[in-house]
Amino acid sequence: MNRRAFAIGALSALSARRAIGANDRIRMGLIGSGGRGREDWSTFLKQPDMEPVAVADVYDPFREKGIALTEGRARGYKDFRQLLDQKDIDAVIVATPDHWHALISIAACDAGKDVYCEKPLSLTVVEGRRMVEAARKHAKIVQTGSQQRSGSHYAQAVKLIQDGGIGEVHRIHAGMQRNIAPGLKPTEMASGLSPALDWDMWLGPAPMRPFDPFRCIYNFRWFWDYSGGQMTNWGAHHLDIARWITGAEAPTEVSGFGGRYALTDGGETPDVQQVTYQFPKVVVMWTSSEVAQGKPLTLDIYGTKGTLTLLRSGFQVAPEMLGAGKDKTPAMEALQVKGNDLNAAHARNFLDCVKSRQRPNADVEEGHRSAVMCHLGNISTRLGRSLRWDAAEEQVIGDAEANRMLARPCRSPWRLA
Ligand SMILES: NC(=O)c1ccc[n+]([C@@H]2O[C@H](COP(=O)([O-])OP(=O)(O)OC[C@H]3O[C@@H](n4cnc5c(N)ncnc54)[C@H](O)[C@@H]3O)[C@@H](O)[C@H]2O)c1
Image (cartoon, rainbow, N blue to C red; front, top):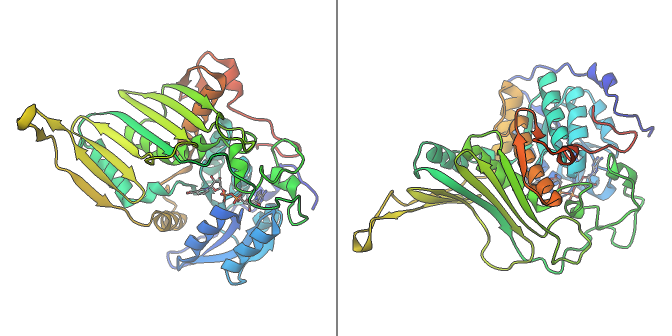
């Protein structure tokens, strides 16, 4: 297909939305039918008011798997622009690698579709801001795929903390830890490029490179051209909750350390990373370690009356013990709360918002701000210095080199609208 540049003006004419009634079915497309895309698709397919219409993926076997989930009800496209041209689609899921999230989501808004875009929302700070602008310009619902935001126990924990239930919160620690030494392996096309994949279209706005199966399916996460490593992969989940708890838009200062020290699989992003964020009266810390067997890291919120540990499965509070010796008494009651199905709740929230036109639980602005936190952590780590952040201007204060890293050039003909 002729590669049109991203002058999406032609699609704007389609942006008039059909009015969707409470009892109507929402007609959906899936763009990016890989591991997560198919999970999202399956979750949405269980909703009674969702109608699958089309699946777009540049890799034929994955597109076919996405279509199979609909029992043949959806059409297939290799080029997502053809899916966006389909007027009978109300909303799309964008579950491509991160380097495509912004261009596809913006094009979808321009084409009049609501969007459920996987986390991390963006590859760069500037991309995320443009996504927010596109959503607002076209009055589109854009939900970030941060499913914790729709977890009732997450909302309960955040309310408890914000109401002072665990006392004054002064520190939040988030992280992920596992042992994948000596590293990961390609998951598809290990013996070479297959005609089933349009590699040029997989790369899209990223720099041209010869095909490398390790850069492609799933493992794109470990390359700066397409993602930001565990900082954006898991950080986008846990730091989103940490930021939600603080109630702040952004940290004022960021300091990151780390690198790819232990793994030998050819990836680029850190396998060990430590980032510290200064928020008003709260220090937020991020730890990730890819070669570290042991206790999994949790999201821990430290208050003067207790420490709350928040997991996808639920949360618990361990009270502070006050006093001395035998007279020690707990500062609050211990608590244990179970979680619900986050994915189903998040999909439901999106569909409800498509109908009501209310802002969704993980609105694009929230997804953007949390992705910014992750991007700043990576920029600080890569530059080897602390950054001071002006959230209103979305600029690093007094650091031109860091500011240049807030955006990336797109490979022609792609461009950020
Ligand atoms: N919310 C969560 O818990 C969660 C979990 C896993 C992954 N994710 C996110 O989902 C996204 C995808 O991750 P994954 O693990 O599924 O990766 P993946 O490599 O398995 O899937 C990505 C798919 O996108 C396709 N693709 C690439 N370029 C495309 C294009 N231009 N048009 C259409 N399709 C294209 C690929 O061929 C592939 O099938 C990432 O952003 C990741 O962070 C979110």
